[in-house]
Structures are given as structure tokens and as C-alpha cells.
Length: 209
Image (cartoon, rainbow, N blue to C red; front, side, top):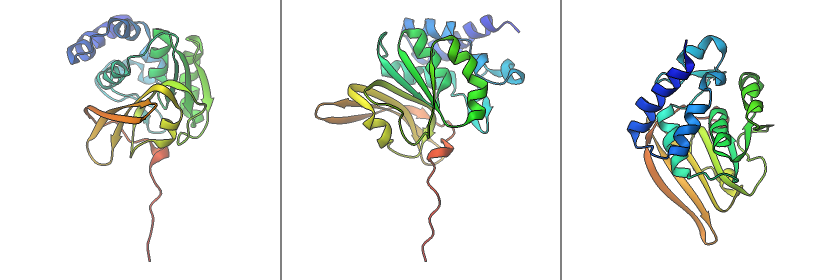
């Protein structure tokens, strides 16, 4: 399979047509080998409009949704980024020129994506996904949905920092952008999306007597 051609088709048919106009981001998407972030036997589907499984139910976010999230973040070369359960996004941000850490807690996912992350200089961090590893980030992104406002991740932002994530509690979700300022945190809804909810953040069922 010609992955380079598939990558170009993905950007032309899934990214550019959905108002992702940032040329630096487009170039990064054209450069990063998305097929390296899924098992070899699923590489053929990496550029289709499907959420390809990485391991243990974790999936790549649709290129359309991820590219729109990343454009909303307005990442700049030299910024510090944290990609939580977002290995492909981590590589794209590194290609743009950010200093990126990729946080995972499932070794099976890391076994698939670690070689590709290492090649682009992304540091892999093993830590529970409900907490952010480190602090003072300019950019935080997640490829999975979360069931509510991710307070721990917001605390890890520096002043001027941005977090982009999909919030979902039912069949549909909303991509949102948070911005941290001296006076507080703002929230703006971006578009509809419905990636799988990050299993590690789903609350345990509670029973009342």
C-alpha cells in the first residue's frame, strides 16, 4: 500500500474540506506516518474515515476531528505540550515544532506507538490518565472523549495555556476549547464529535441503599 498517497488523500478529503486551513498543520499531517500508530495488521485502515483500534479498545481519533481540535489550539513551535491518550496527536504537534510529552497508562498501547513517538522526539510518560504528568503546559490535547470537565488537566496548564478535548456523556459529544488566563478559565464549544470515552475516566458505578 502506498501510505504516502493515502496520507495526501486523507488530508485532501478529510482535513482541508472541513475548514482546517492552517498550512503548517496540514504539512505536519502530511509528514507524520499515521499507519505507525496502529498495529501492523491494521495499518491499511489508518487513513480511512474510521476510528482504528490501537490496543485494548483505545482508538485513533478521526483525522477530521483531530485536525479541527489541533487548529483550535493554535499550536506554536517552541511551546510545551502534553498529549493525554493521544499518541498520533503528539507526533503531529512535535512535527509542528512543539516539545511534547505523550502520557499513557496502558502498556499495550505504548508497545504499539512508542517506536514512532521516539523517532519524532516525543517523550512517553507512563502515568494514570486521570492526572496530568507535569505542569505549565501551553497545550494539552486528548484523542478520546472525557465524561466531564477535566479539572486535573486544566490545573496543569500555564497561563495562556489551551486544552482541547471532546466532552461526552451520551451518544453525542462536543469538542471544546479551554483557555487559562490570569482571571480564570474560559470554555468554548467547537463542533460535534463522538469518539469513545476514555475508559480510565469513566466513574465507577455507585449504589445507594
